[in-house]
Length: 125
Image (cartoon, rainbow, N blue to C red; front, side, top):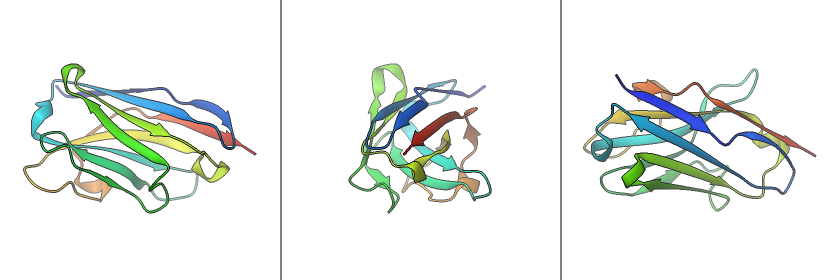
């Protein structure tokens, strides 16, 4: 049974930073994609970043490129999302997701098979 557990959310002022973590269990970590998605009230779930755990390559959404960094700790089956220069528009529930993939990581939330429970990020102005 695959389980994804996020941590690290919270409240921060604009310009601040947060680091999210997602620990995976029951998942063959080295053979797929892990992604971060976010969803604000009334909006669709959007991809923030994804990482292929075997190849190590990453993808970032246009809104966060240069501001957020996704990384992995292979020994702990954990991925992280370092979020810098946060703005109020970054306020959302952030979800970790995973899917097995031998190729590129899918950009669509619907393509991911496993999801965490989410962690709230709130940025105040």
